[in-house]
Image (cartoon, rainbow, N blue to C red; front, side, top):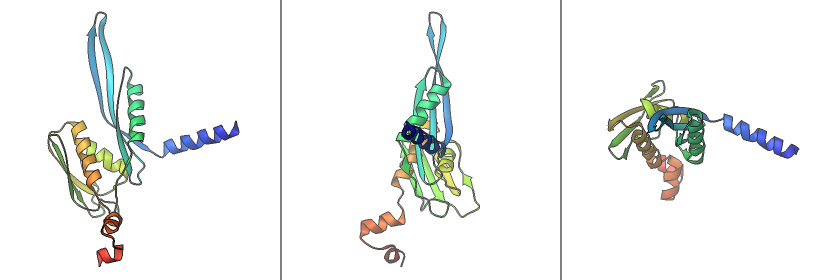
Length: 173
């Protein structure tokens, strides 16, 4: 019995380490015989501020239930975000449908120059300085997917060195 309590406590502590950002909450109405029936969809981003981020999309008849579902999905979809000195390692472009996102590294003290979903992702991931530009369609879902396309294309120095079969010192010179 004690073992399960300790496991539950550890699980709750693990939950608290994530920061949750609600990107979009949408209400839709279905007209039925008795009036309107509302349902909600929630788009959330979670991160541990240590280089792991994820997003989730949930639908339900209640706001809190939709948010809970989206957070659960986000926890299952965590991806690593390479961070170098509080910024991203290199300039990158991401595309999803008609949305394009451009991310540039910035020197310390610049802050997060981004709007909407891009800002939420960078804050949740632990990036403190970055420049960004969203080009094309401004649909929040598509911008979010384009930003995650950027993250999936990003490479850190260790990975590049390993792929080339060299050490970090050989790579940097």
